[in-house]
Image (cartoon, rainbow, N blue to C red; front, side, top):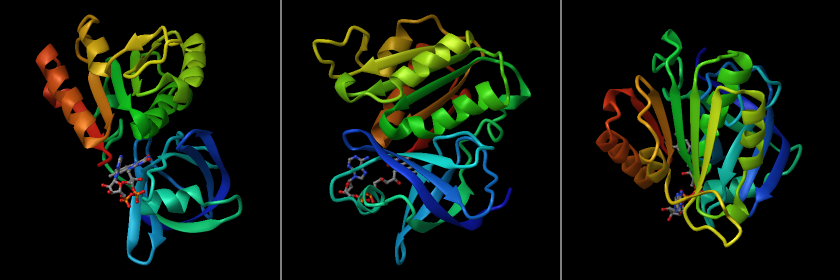
Length: 234
Ligand SMILES: Cc1cc2nc3c(=O)[nH]c(=O)nc-3n(C[C@H](O)[C@H](O)[C@H](O)COP(=O)(O)OP(=O)(O)OC[C@H]3O[C@@H](n4cnc5c(N)ncnc54)[C@H](O)[C@@H]3O)c2cc1C
């Protein structure tokens, strides 16, 4: 698997909730990547932005989950992409993968902790483990969002739980509406209330601030820092 230049053709660019797009592209040639890796999109001359793959390897198309930031160069570029548009990308890049962190050398539990669009690489790893690798190891998925009314993937992950008994899913909302009757606060608040999972490898992804706060909390709860891996989105 080497880094290369690809042309991605847009197959779908759906606004799944306000300010969140699920972009699906077809590469001009097959792409060999590991779940958790990202591509650098060419936005304009000398302007590139990184986006993690949100779908597992070995599919005909590749999905990206993009938070549209008002006025952002990459965000505006992606917001304006339409079916049939083509753009250049470099990749696959990055080391936030199950392979590169030794996770496939044992069958120990895996804890995923994602906030916001940080769910992208974790969704890729989750499907890779369950569908491609057919794992029966324990997987704990904590996914934090601000608003339940703008939640995405909650239903999808809920459905996975009913198919895969080894998966536990904890959706966490920090600014709940009156209708929300699930976990409230931050992912780390919910993790703290649960028994320590021994020998777990932990994968954390989200904004710099969230990732740092989650890791500091997990270490203070007794999790081994050497088994915590992360990707920061900036
Ligand atoms: C390895 C890696 C993988 C990534 N994967 C994804 C992914 O899968 N999905 C995804 O949506 N993003 C991802 N990102 C973030 C992405 O690369 C861009 O940084 C993001 O889309 C903002 O770029 P922009 O060009 O739209 O905004 P810019 O033009 O770079 O910034 C516009 C303004 O918005 C501010 N800003 C930048 N980021 C944020 C933010 N998160 N929240 C609020 N304000 C912000 C900036 O400070 C600036 O003032 C990833 C980043 C890295 C490093």
